Image (cartoon, rainbow, N blue to C red; front, side, top):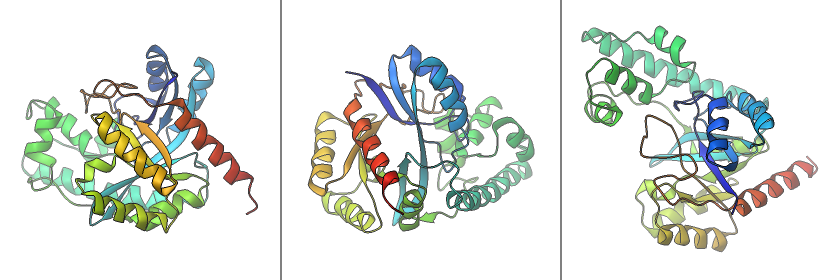
Length: 285
């Protein structure tokens, strides 16, 4: 079976591998395709695509948008037009809002004597900064044992340096992916700790706005859990996707292409999604 991974993060958001490094790593892992699904940005795709051409790795343009529907929900988008004029202003708003939140977090830390300078963070990590970057710095400063400890004691919800941010609505997130020519997918459904009725409610609500798929295979999911999600996808006529949610050092227990061990995402998932995307792009506007 051809190995693929459709949920991968680069340094363009909160991953620790550059887009080019991810493609090289995919090659060493004998993967035939990966999707770059950075948080709220598509800026890493072009570099990954060029490297993919050189190394014979298919690179799918993607994104992961943070939304709220009661609690936090993530929507993946695949085969989006990364140059879409409809997408750019929305992502610019998301990045600006997060930037303002992050600057305030850095100021709170600095006021307590923790030497965190947000402008220097942006120089080092780029325009898309998240809590994992704060966690890395706290570890480097010797204030936390590892990134999980940094989250638990400093930047997780309820801790002193956590600040909330604004999110796109789940409805708008699905719509904007569709408007950019992409395929919106509900990410890692079991992470939301919902019962069957709650999960169906989200799926049915999002389908009203154009949801097209469910992430059925994911790091740590049992065969029974994946089977349940695949049955849901078939019941609702939705595409199936899967991926590791690889970030690198901030999630050291997750391996590219293999997740927490034993992750297998069929190439058939990608073929069906690609064919759907091509069909949509050929339809009259």
